[in-house]
Image 1: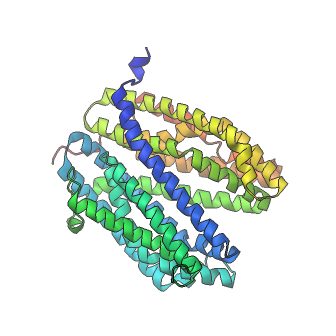
Image 2: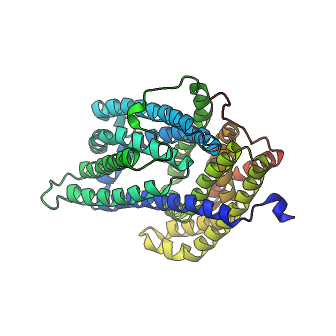
Image 3: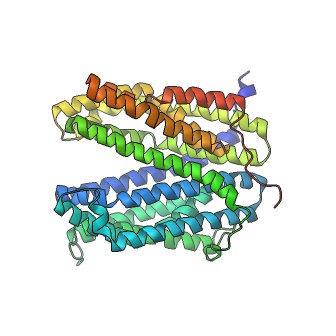
Length: 455
């Protein structure tokens, strides 16, 4: 009975792990870079930390936009990969890289020449504006390098080449930390530049990643054969397909990002105790959930490839199997959270009140993690991989802005509910979303063949 709806093949799970594990490692590295920046700058005071945090906001916007552009491209690439049409994949990669390049170039020009004006929108404190503007101006030098390498690496994921980007990110992590240490504190003969030194470290890592990506592209990679110098040779026939699938993904990421900003504003209005507690909870959640996000990316690649191969019945089984895998992953992360929560909270030097709120929030998180895992794998993985990007956008954006944020505002400022209940309300859309996701998968309407036959 189970074999009728699920896959229990050894090869399938090997494919999942081969994609999910490297991406999980990349996510750990990404969290590690942020943590190291914060730890080093924290020794210089609040102004340095705030300057880097605010100065990095335009980069965060660009990162979300590029993920949307490249994520939409990956929907097409994974299905064309299933059909074995590498020439079309190269055409899609050209479009993705070109738009990523143009966006990064525009943001580079604006950020480099008008950093103070931009940062004035984020703060009214003169010292913070000065520090963040200096950070942003320096950081903007690396925007184009990041855009081109990141777009390339995301495309490689869609053709099941994941390990190379993981190796490059591991090396760039050490480049970042070493340059940070040198230029933040003035070690080994380098000038002590403080917050600007942190930006120099990040830019150095981005340039290293770009050079490594170009070496791999031109001298090693032979499955797809994409070359950057062909970026502006655009296939106009593919542009409508690209826009159709990239815009919903980009919109999804943008709406999610703005929702996160709104949620942060709600927490800030509640008080510093809630903000501090949520910071602790967020870090632990990000660390224990890296493999879940890896599974979601694996689901997008494998579902897309299977549909591209024309194996529709197998695609249905693949979707159900990924939901089962997500549930197991969620149960494992919930168990880890339960076991380490006391020790993890104890690491932080926060008030007893904040520690108690963090403990209560983690208790809630333990119970909802299995559901969160299913939601993430379906939205980021199954639905996007199946080409159902519009539904993913409506569920993610609609759930956050129609349910979570209004309910959180009411509970926080009208009902004056406990912090743990408010925290739950910020994620309560998942109950409705999962029901719709499962219904969509059962109905088979999530399967969209996005490839063309006239190539």
